[in-house]
Length: 457
Image 1 (cartoon, rainbow, N blue to C red):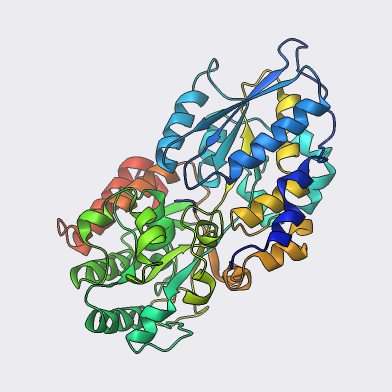
Image 2 (spheres, rainbow, N blue to C red):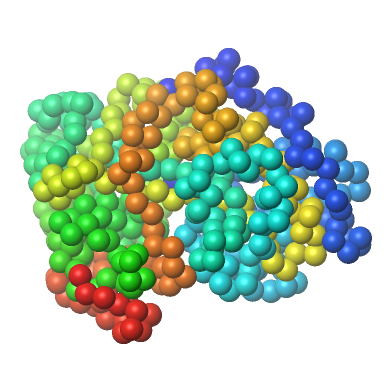
């Protein structure tokens, strides 16, 4: 899951790709050994995610024009996020097939850095004037445990509740809607189920099929809003949390949501592509009350988006996901994002970095932020009137930043995430109770990190 009203023609023209023709990141110093003057760029491209391909293609054209004799070889991968990551890991593990530049999820930066896959960018960034314009928190997302920067952010995001105002109003739920507790969500779902039996009241992803979407757009909103609010990882001790009542409570909420018929049928929920139906069918057709999704959601509905929906700005509303019982700070969000990184095995480190500066300069970053509904990480992009005007929900999703959380910056996280996904699947399918699924998760964490790296909640 990649995670505004129709962009006016004037807005698109203002930041159109034609306007990027003059972008320049500065001439590179050439290949490190003076031999092969080419670099490869690996990234994800799907029918519903083409914005990055557009930017990287434009950067390639400009870069090659400014640097005769240099060739940029684009290698788009058409696959789900998880399948793309698998292909990337295989490529990075081989010096022969490792791409010079690649699209990297922030949650794999630390593990890939520790594996020796990522190029240290500190020296290059010290000479790049634009780096000072990047948000400090966004910079940290691309840093390793030692503080070295290995990846440059393309943008960031938050997670909120996206709800269909027409569906809620038909059920007698007041809009604008802002649930204060988990029970408020269940109460609204019950009203929708009663008034419109054929409508899915409230969607929260679960299971391994939707991968990282299960945790980022569902489970973590619950876990980080529980009474202890500790989440998965104790930053102070540097240990993973087990035996957490908040973990059990979060699973119990999902158990209730699915068992009471408020969520999607389980067989559909386990489909890796269910998010496409959520964006393309359920919400636009008024067949779903709400879902937890990213700030990037409007990118699917704008003119030219994968599921263009001209009325979305009028029909949809946004709310913060509430804490369990209304505890402070009153809401929960999760932030992630993707980056561009370079391989530690590249033979053309200077070329690779300079190409990245073309792809990430102001004009390209502005176009990408607008057309992929990103929260800008460059201050000059955030200040652009065209960025602020392009998405009618930009203020709503940005309001989630003060209550947002990030995935644990630990190299064991990818394996832990899978264990969380497995726990949610066991619960919604009825294979395990919430307590038993949580116990299985605890055991999995101990196997992954060892007893000396866990602490009890």
